[in-house]
Length: 240
Ligand SMILES: [Mg+2]
Image 1 (cartoon, rainbow, N blue to C red):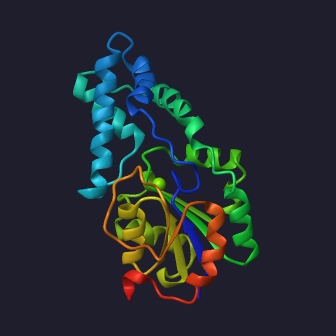
Image 2: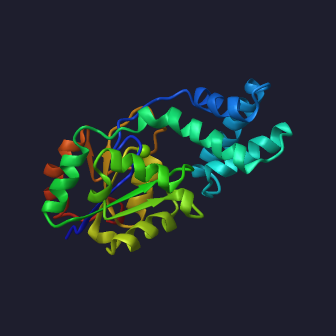
């Protein structure tokens, strides 16, 4: 029996955006090193790429503050927390337009709650929790998600099982009672399926592929409700 439906955030509850990450870091670099923007931006980008590479290596999580610290040290800039806070604010403002939720997200979450299902969110992110929560509140989603877990608050990232366990514990369900919806085959589908969760892939051909078969595939969040009934009568494909 399904008791909870859990979601990834970027590309799942939001529309996927292919963003020039260097542009976003240039905004932070102009605060941190106005006389050396190019070099600082390149160092920030390199530090962030190292963080994302960990989803297939150490699975260790990071914070935006850590990215700034690593980059500052790499270019020989003193680590200044106040300056860093200002740079992070400008950097996150730059990202804001890409954080808008899918048009159907609110309606779908509301419908799940109406059916008595619990809901939750698990995002691989180095951005701070407060920023995520303010974006969710802006779009009317915050109160429709029973638990929200951000890997910037954890030691590990998806697909590490401890990241999924943190969300399952927060929602109060077992893996076998949960469906996980995500747009990444490795981080989301493989990670959640390995624990015995049923998985729904919201198709995204712009992220790296991985040879795993989700229990269901949808192209639009609105298609989730019809497939849930079907999933309720089957076990997770990966645990069969
Ligand atoms: Mg995603």
